[in-house]
Length: 140
View (tube, rainbow, N blue to C red):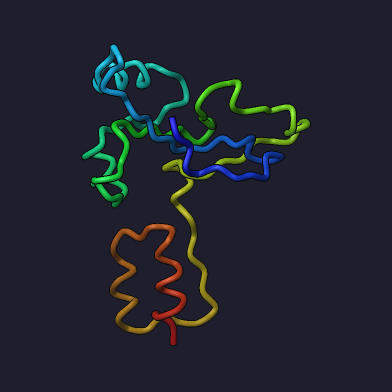
């Protein structure tokens, strides 16, 4: 299990994330489908996707994507194992996370009007990273 969206500032994150990649070794006794079925039964899991579906859904490169992608719900953080995540450093603080689907809905607020071209573009589904392109190229 690899947690790509973690933060070394463990006071808020506990080195946990809302998105993890699971690699199923060829020598493992379980298939990807069995692993996915087991993870789907866990509380706090919003999505469990195979490699192809994850690559398509999240616009990720297929050739380097994991066998299974797991996304937590808005109230859950996930990690590799209990011993890899020392939550003692949190000291009563709330856990924060990055990478969940719920966190991809981010308001875009600009202090200048959009150009005509960008007014038409924003009618499509935007992703949180689109703000950079819009703010740099789409305002008057």
